[in-house]
Image (spheres, rainbow, N blue to C red):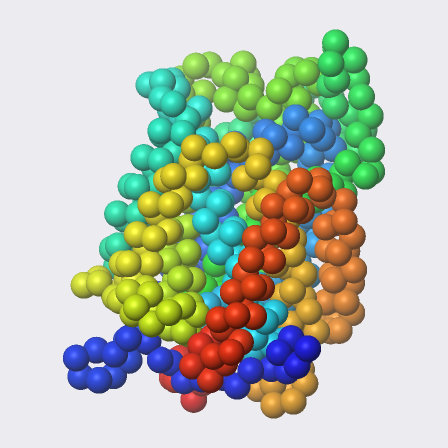
Length: 469
C-alpha cells in the first residue's frame, strides 16, 4: 500500500541524451495565445458538436443541453484541479506525472493507462465523423475516411509545434464560424420555448414520446464530461509553454469557458429549432441546417466541420505523442522502447511516439463506435477521479509551500468531485466497465511484475530541470 500513498521523489529530466551528453528537452516555443489555440483545437468544439453530440440527442433528446450544462459545471471543478496540479507539477506527462508525484507511483501508473486509453481512442472517434461531412462533395466509407484523417494528422504532428499552432488556429476559426451559423439558424427557426430544455423528452419507437429519466441523464454525464475533455491539453503542453507556472492555469480555465460556450449555445439552439422531436432525436444536424437555410449553407457548414475534424486529429496526435514521450523519459518501458519513444526529430517533435499514436489510431477507425464511446466515457471519468484524489493531497509536505496556482474552496472542491465522479462511474454500462477494468487489471500486473521490482530504475517521474529550479 505504500506505493499508492507515498509521493514519489521527483527526478530531474532524463531523456535520451544528445551527442553533447545533455538530455533532450522539448522547446518552450509557445505563449498563452498559441497554447490556447492548440488546446481549444484539441477540445475541437465544432467537431464534438457535430460528431459526439448527435449521439446524445439520440439517447437524451431535449435533456441533452441540460446534461452538457451539468457536465460543464462539473468540469469547472476538474479544471481547478488541473490548474493547481499543472502549475505545481508542469510536465508533458500530464495527469500521470501529477498523480504519481502526489498520490504515489501505482496511482500514477493507472492514470497513465487510463489517459493512454483516452488519447488513443478519442482521435479515431472524431476522425470517423469526417465522411458524413464530406458527403455533399464525395461519398466515403467512414472507417476509411477516419483512417486517412489519422494518417494526415500524424504527418502534420511531425512538424514544429509553432507551425502547428498557426495551422490549427486557422482551422479553429472556421469551426467556430460553423458553430455560430448553426446557433443563429437554430434560434431564428425556434419551434419551442426555453422550457423545452428541461422537458426531458426523447422520441421513442413507433412515434411515441418517452420521458428521459434522471438516471439516464446521470449515465450520460460520462459522455458529457468527454465533450469538453480536451482542456487538459494545456497540462500536456506545459513543458513547451512559456512561463508555465502562470500560463497553464490561464489556458486551462480559458479553454473550458470558451469551449463550453461554443458547444452549449448551438446545442440549445438545435433543441429549440428542431422541427419535431423525431428530427432532434435523429441528430442529423447537417439536414437541420439545410432545412433552416439552403443546401449551399449546409455544404459550407459541413466542410467547416470536416476541416475541424482534421484540425482535431492534428492537435490530438501532438498531445498524445507527448504522453508517450514523457513515459519513455520516465522509464516506463524496457530500455530499447524508452530510447525509441524519447527520440526527437529535426523539428523538435518526438517522431517515434507520434507514429505510434497515429498509426494505431488509424487502425482503431475500424472498431465498433459504440464500444469506443463507452470505454472512453468510463476512462475519462476514472481519470478525473484520480486527478481529484491527487488534488486533495496537493497541499501536504513540501508541496504546501511550492509556488503554484491554488484553487478556491479547497478541499471541498476535490472531495465533492470525488463523490460525484464515483457515482457517475457506478451508473455506467457493465460491458464498458469490464472492458476498462480488464485493461486496468493487465496494467496493474505489469506494474506488479515489472515496474515495482525495478522501482530504482523504472517509472521515475520527472520534472524538467529549468521548471524545478
